[in-house]
Amino acid sequence: MALIKPVKGIAPQFGDNCYLAENAVIVGDVVMGNDCSVWFHAVIRGDVNAIRMGNKVNVQDGAIIHCTYLKAATTIGNNVSIGHRAIVHGCTLHDNVLVGMGAIVMDHAVVEENVLIAAGAVVLENSRLEAGHIYAGVPAKKIKAISPETFKDTIERIANNYVMYAGWFKEEI
Image (cartoon, rainbow, N blue to C red; front, side, top):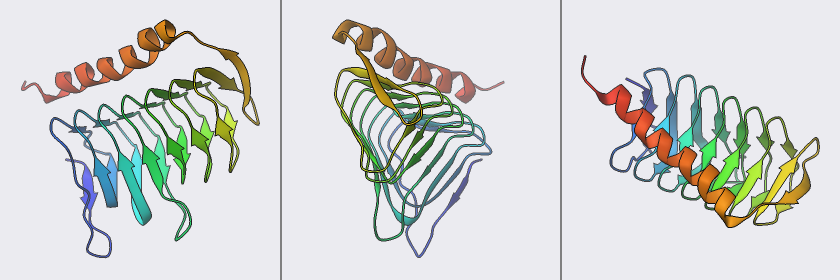
């Protein structure tokens, strides 16, 4: 069972059909939509500010979602994949976003819909990432536009796959 813990009297809330790995940690003011998954060693800390997550969000192994006290909450839309060991901190991710493995998204950044953030990229504070593009590098820069078909094939496929993977772990042995 995941570590689920209230902070200052506020406990995490979960939508329907969510999967939480046994060593995931979810604490405080966290509200998660339906069909979400939080994988091994991932941490979602709503201790110092609010974290709001839409439907079909997957937080992969070792990822961290946090905020900044009194300054920056974290809001995550629908069909969002947060890659292995990524950090999402005090920012807004709109629908259909992929945060690549090891990427970092900092306070007050706004990532519009249909954006792919490459592995290892660093999205600086107060950045705005334009819809329909790939961003990569340190600091993250716009690399190229991507067609809506590519996003449907990539972002939506990954979000749907993680719902399927979560089902594998819910099966009884």
